[in-house]
Length: 383
Image (tube, rainbow, N blue to C red; front, side, top):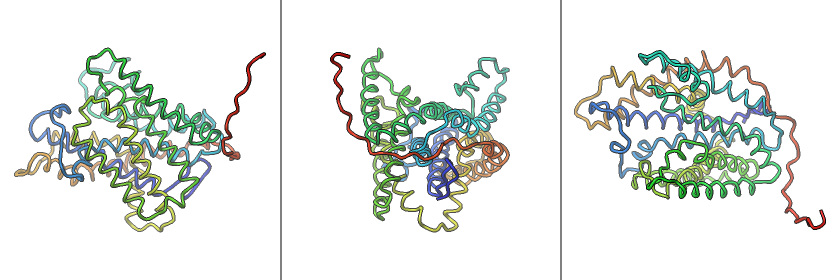
């Protein structure tokens, strides 16, 4: 582990970022290219991919990479800022320097693919992350959710430092209750869960669970280094995703969908805490270094892979004699993923890195973090 003020570097975190980015690329590649091979556009309600094979469902439900990214956000921010005051303005400035430059480039390029000139409303929506429909914008909604989390993280970090993990657990319970009330009060005969899935209201569980995983890592990392814990955590994640796939969870509006983000976040939080604690003291070989480099450019991979998949869908050659899903998987692994990584190294060094070097420390000196004491009831009579 290397630390420079608030910027804590943990190689295992970059490993997991790489895994999350690859999952998202494979997921979109299998979906979009398999439909393209069949000469149509992918429609989730009718074209979702299912399998009895847990390894296949990890790819078919590769949207879980987004949940892993969100858990990692809560985890790494908390590891760097726990017990320290956060300078709000600098924190948000650093987040914009991290996210905004490459996002703007990809969003503006996406607008350039349209025949009509962009309107003022289009440009305003881009600036506020409420991007219009375009071929490269399939993941932009997640940036909006991340920015909402950034707005409240300093407060949540202070809450964790002063009140302990119980405060975040109570907040998790409150969010779950309020989310259920929103679902029950919907005027629609079959309430939809998409708006919860695509917003902070349905995703804050994953950030909070990442923060709680960081608290456990900071206070109990020795217990997390048990050799059996990472494989058990990964097995739980695979089992949960397999079950989600078997019940057609993504296209379902079942009430059980209300607890999905929390369950998904919990298993990834366990994976993150166990893997980071277990790997931080081990010397990294060539595979560790390669994964860390891929994790370093994972944001570029995340934002540019739609560009590569769009080009392949229009101009690519697909092997014959194979089921469309297998052909799409092979093209994604052998062509789309390497091309995306190559493009990402260029965009990272040319667009991301110059702005990342402008970031400034946003945390103050460490302050003592006391064990929260039970609050005493105060008498209000006569006051």
